[in-house]
Amino acid sequence: MAGGSLAGRHLRSSEGSAFRRSLYVTQDIRKGDRFDSANLRAIRPGHGLHPRFEDLFLGGVAASSIPRGTPLDWSMLSGQ
Image (cartoon, rainbow, N blue to C red; front, top):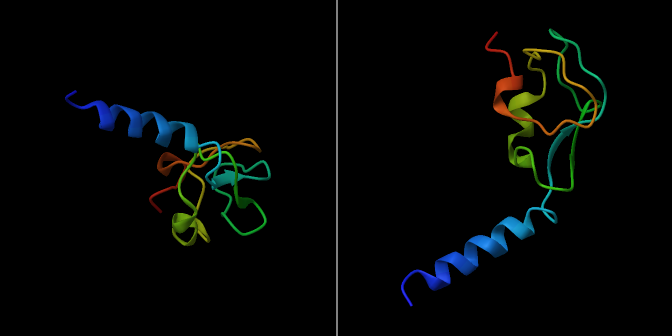
């Protein structure tokens, strides 16, 4: 069966995202606010960026307003 094992692996990895941690916004952030350890946290489920990227966000500026509970993505970091 061609590709059978790859298809099974893909399903397992997508199901596993519920158990992985990722970066989430833990407080409402306004455009121009700085990211810090008080407003970012690595929690489950894994729908945001991997926690290894936290240091790239800390001290960075929010490109837009972000509500609490939002999984972090690259578009939220300002290029300033």
